[in-house]
Image 1: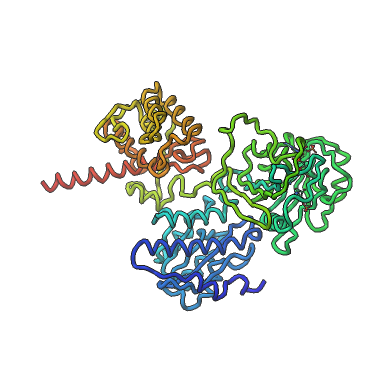
Image 2: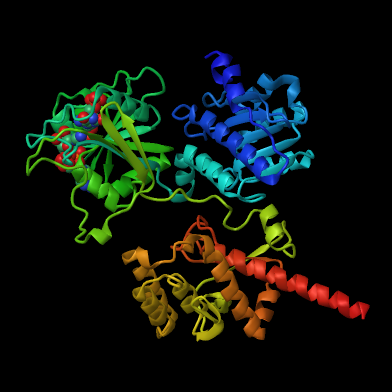
Length: 595
Ligand SMILES: NC(=O)C1=CN([C@@H]2O[C@H](COP(=O)(O)OP(=O)(O)OC[C@H]3O[C@@H](n4cnc5c(N)ncnc54)[C@H](OP(=O)(O)O)[C@@H]3O)[C@@H](O)[C@H]2O)C=CC1
Ligand SMILES: Nc1c(N[C@@H]2O[C@H](COP(=O)(O)O)[C@@H](O)[C@H]2O)[nH]c(=O)[nH]c1=O
């Protein structure tokens, strides 16, 4: 592939040129725009770099003129940063390099960092840190050690536009991030359905529901995936090929999940001359047919328990990063129930086929009330020819702000922590050694009731106050009842149960700005608790130098998660509070010595 295809040419450069204002907002807008551009460039590597990340790099002068761009073309090719530096030439000196992701130092390869250093880049803006723990932070540290100013979005500066830009960086490497956090590959369930919600006629005939244009998009999706999966029934009904036929990108492995192995002898998927096929089946199923498939070059993998999670864990171990599920509703329901589907991509065709028995995209999930429905997040709508493409995530992309904060971040949160020798103190249940740090600890606090700041009430625990705050200020008597029910709940567990279930069942009762204010609410409650009880404050101060982590395996926002994938906001706030206390005491010690 010619270099020119990888390095963007001048019209793009002109379009990306931005006016630089001298106030912070303009700087943020420029930084955000260039980071988004880097993410767009990285998008061009999708499907060819797996299992490596998708990297893009933009180099812009201090006046906001883009002079070089590049993206990683494939595994083992020149890094995006080196390509962008080559394109920008002399103009690199003192310019800013925008990277959607911190470069990874694979096998001691420092090419990306060296390219930026040698070119004389003055500043580097990074969208997200590298998601893999052993690489996270290394390149950033190295760049800083060369005197380059490095800013990481969400850590070194924050604003709404930057948050949007950061999101685009998370999206472009969603498969890698999910894989890093969840031990299964990133899975997308894709289907085409009629306007009346059918994926085939009652006869099982399904060719075609979506338009040719939509089907070309499916080829592209396949080209970005490491494998495409179908169930046994789809093989029997459709005899699919499951190849990417849009002319570029790679072709994914085809995987069939079948319990019975009752599959036809002749099938397009058994032709492995161009693409391989793996059949995942139940241990011991139709041994003679297994032999037959093996003779055709089809790999058969037996599972003791053939279910989507086991199969995904297996393919994770084989190094697969992203999987496209193109099965029917039976297997789709099983995959969703096992929690392995991360994203849904649905092509909706303006056609009606009817039929009581006609299959639908997702079989039985055991849900009986609409309130149980799974709500997609980050939903996008796009018209593709006559069809509507609706896509969204079933699971949020894990945030990468480091759980146990990185050395730099730890130091920022609490300078008393020795970034190189910090120990970690885990707390979770109230009976643990540091159980008093838990929000469920029985330490009543006096905090304002509702929006009336002078109406102080006693709350039996931080959890009582935190849960009730979700419903404060909402003009609905039911919201008011929630606050009172939570305040008078007999235990923190009961308060949490009421707060969480009401939030899920009646989201309209939750204050609109809750997501924006919840961290502040928690901080105020913690501050009140630790200031009210001197022995708790002493205990918190006694942990100086250690990283605090709430060891909740399931709360990925306040807790650290099972494998460190959680955001640990409770631990962070406690460290922040500790830091505040430490600086207060050093100021008062200084004043005392002056007096
Ligand atoms: N419009 C569209 O986008 C699509 C339409 N279709 C249509 O859907 C219909 C087929 O739908 P459907 O029957 O739901 O097909 P599936 O692709 O969901 O296949 C179901 C089969 O998957 C196998 N399987 C293996 N493990 C599991 C598990 N844990 N849970 C569930 N199934 C498992 C079984 O195969 P086995 O019986 O061999 O043991 C099962 O019968 C066809 O008419 C096809 O044309 C299919 C895909 C996409
Ligand atoms: N019917 C239908 C789809 N069906 C899916 O595509 C598979 C066939 O792929 P191939 O043999 O490679 O062309 C089929 O088995 C099923 O998984 N997909 C769509 O985008 N639109 C459609 O209308």
